[in-house]
Image (cartoon, rainbow, N blue to C red; front, side, top):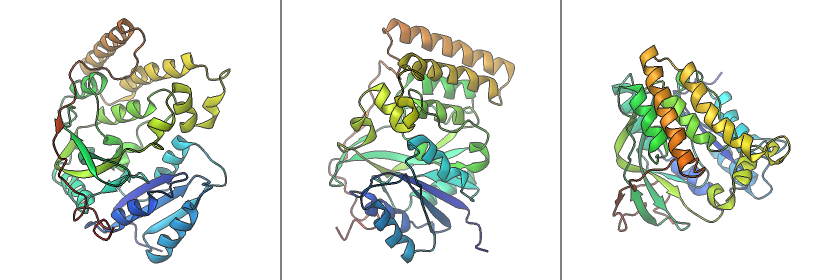
Length: 315
């Protein structure tokens, strides 16, 4: 029997041939090597399977699983965690890039701070060619020791990319799996924050790729975004848009009750949630995260992934 790795990295993918090889190379070249890479191919129809099998034949850390049918993004996202074995877990994306020290520094941060439930690096945006276009300062107060402050920050400020953090698996198992209603990813990470603070490694180690086929751009409406998460959401009769919004709001309310909070902390979170609902209603149904303060941007136009991300120097 293979030794259980300390860290599991889950990579759900569907038709990712354009950038998948670069992402896998960046993960396999990490300075932290004690991990397994679980790739769940969501019944891709392009060359994704061929790319994955080629890498799996070369590196025993890779577990490649091909789904018979397209489960949807959310079930596939949950699947890679369900079959993971590590005490730590990270979701990876087929189109993003990772600095070679990302995993090592996140694991070290979790070892140094036992109260922290998730650790990640700062995010820089890249284009289709891998050129850095901008970096956004992390605005959230997820490092606060006070759960209601973390909750309020998640409600009222534009967030980062915390769903790509290295997370303690035992904490992930205590929260609801990723769902498929409007902004389900936001409520998922918010519930995680109610279980403990996050840590941001003070360096640009994660490179998020913006391209025309990215889900946020390819699915511009609420209905399309939710159907991408789970094909069943495409049914307007069983899943009207009103329900997709209602489940979103209810998720915040129910997580407060489930979370390990004191009575006063729950009251504080409920007060913030009421304030958030009222503020969104006044904005005529703007049910995303709305903030009057724009995110600060850092000038990294001259920064390059070459030399930082494994595999990029040869391209």
